[in-house]
Image (cartoon, rainbow, N blue to C red; front, top):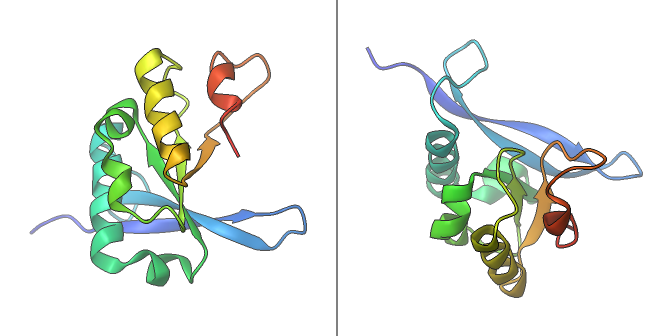
Length: 132
């Protein structure tokens, strides 16, 4: 029997505490976790988002999609519409020249950028300057 796999969504609130969008999370079974690598999880979330449709998954709000370095560099997130997709860059992604170039291209294509788990003195400062 194949394991149950699904996309979960976690609300992202604005300053007025209204739902701005949903972070989409790939889950591997009932324990509410994913035990594969982060590239696999990012690709699986993109696959499910394309199959189900972002409007259905996010009730017409923005979809925050976790992206690894590989997902960014390969441009996989561009399979989703820029008007409803927020590219959420994981904390494990370095602010190297290839990542910065990929993010600049995404910004020029109309995508919003968010940083996952950003903290003071974060080494991803160059990415923070691009973030919405």
